[in-house]
Image 1 (cartoon, rainbow, N blue to C red):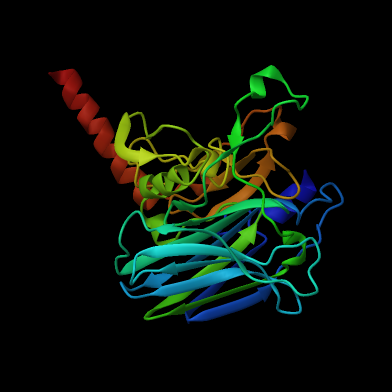
Image 2: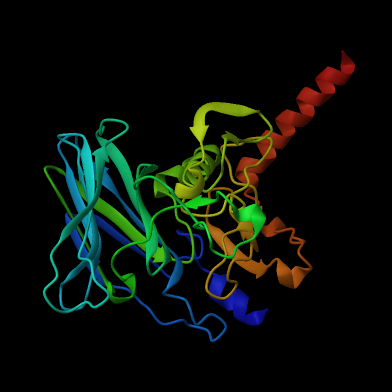
Length: 332
């Protein structure tokens, strides 16, 4: 437990991201990915279930290129988003080996589901495993058709028949340990993050409901997003198999004022320590993550109270107004 707390305290932006850097104003970024696990319990840190996030400000003419490269500068996988023509494409350099005469190959291409609008954007990548993953731009998956997981004649469980997933890559991301990105035609980057985690735009800390929307529509949720007991929000859907994380990962908003984060978070994304498990965390009402503990270590329950995280300048007037309103209803 002490190890977990030591790793979790002080994380204030991405929820359990290994790296989260402010790059405001930059038009290019390049960094070497930390590929070694920090704890012995998760030897597959780099090769499975990693999330990458790139945030920024774009214009209607922006062109964004991002991808994974070998230390020698060879491409493994990249994506290009061209706002001016409303199109995207992904490229690879096929082959099991990273050296030798490999030719860059178009993987998929398509049109943007919505025109680029001046303002914030996000580009995410889920590295599901070294031969499978997907890019998303402003929640739009950049992939081809889903393929059947099991082919006829293979041994498989009957309940898995017909299960579909994205097609495997023709390259090996194990070697793509350098991440590069650039933006031209106007616009800049503001931040990048990665790890076994999720992150959402810093500006969404001003409204928990919007942050929750952002998380859910990029998740593996299937169907309409349900928020705060208020029913379905038309047009907000999860991404299903194209999504970047399981739908159980979430943030909780305060019921009395859903623009504020609840001080106890019961389903925060796991990290390299916790694997696929959930964390039970404290959070400020304006979205700063505090101390955490593994839910499994708490008997698969979240028993934190986190009372010291309540901001009474926010809390007191809202609860007082709610009490007055309830009293008025009772009098009637």
